[in-house]
Length: 464
Image 1 (cartoon, one colour):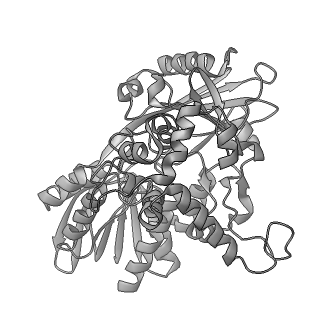
Image 2 (cartoon, helix red, strand yellow):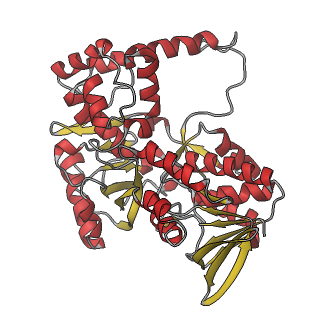
Image 3 (cartoon, helix red, strand yellow):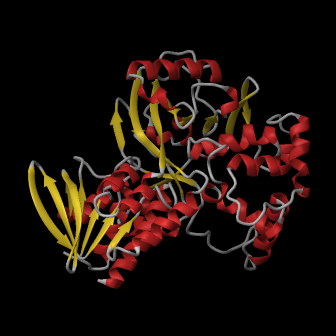
């Protein structure tokens, strides 16, 4: 066996698919009864609900390449235009997030004083070299306290469900750090970057009616017809018996010429050997497997924290509640609410509901209030209903509910994350043929996992 991939989430599937597409021998071992990890779609009672990630941005070439290889490009569904409108709950009500600088100046998202402080960002200085700032520190320097507490915290909540005081800005939002490094001011950097992009456009591609074909990557928020499960099903079909479910790797050891894996599969213990091993599992699982091999490496991987998250879906019969506007809303920590936010699924992806139904997907827990995820299903549904009523005025009783809990939900790229990942990479050099991938290290989104998986698959295919 050339390569053994441990873990059948989107990262492991991307590695295995890339290896197989390059004609390389590989096996994928997944301990649970299904492939996909946190990614999965459930159809019930006229609703399509996602158990974890809800969508992806159609801007990653590796994702498009994978979709094309799986004959899924025709099933990519862009979000409705209404999804461009987004809201933040602040100062007692939902307020629209402005879509442009002029709109920001005229909006009520921040009081006048806070907006003027944001405009003062033009005079902000750079951070000292070599300092890994928290997102909050970076935000307060550039945008001021209130914009950080309201806007920046809301943005990170929708991605990491984290603690703005602990997340590393360099690890979570590297484009912001790049703008600061190259232009000092984020506003100046954004203006200069936009001008450079316009200048670089080929003739005839301007917004006033050029004749060139539109770019292949739309950049739109997207899913697949049938939900994200369509991607998992297509990957599973393409891999066939290369992917083995119910196969838990219990141990890992270095042997001459490669690696030996101790596997428990459907109640039976066995061993297999491979020249290369990819651990595409959550950090805490990788820590368990690495501990007998290299305690120092295991400890570094074990330092990566996770925020627990619960996804509470509430569905409403046609006519019982108005269709909500926009993609959804986020709630910054300063509001001291029990809801992180909610996605207006039936507005964003109308194909996920039947016959005029309305579907909210509410997020609870995160680094902010991790203990809420431990509530039983009835309590989580009651919490989501109470919060939707208080924040968005939804008074109707749902006819459909479904809850998914993820005790180790979202990796937290806290201050020191980049240094930690660099140390992990160095430590791995002591173990030729051993590799780590997944959303704990170099990007948490579906696009990140697919891109990193494809890159690793290419590298391994070139070696074997």
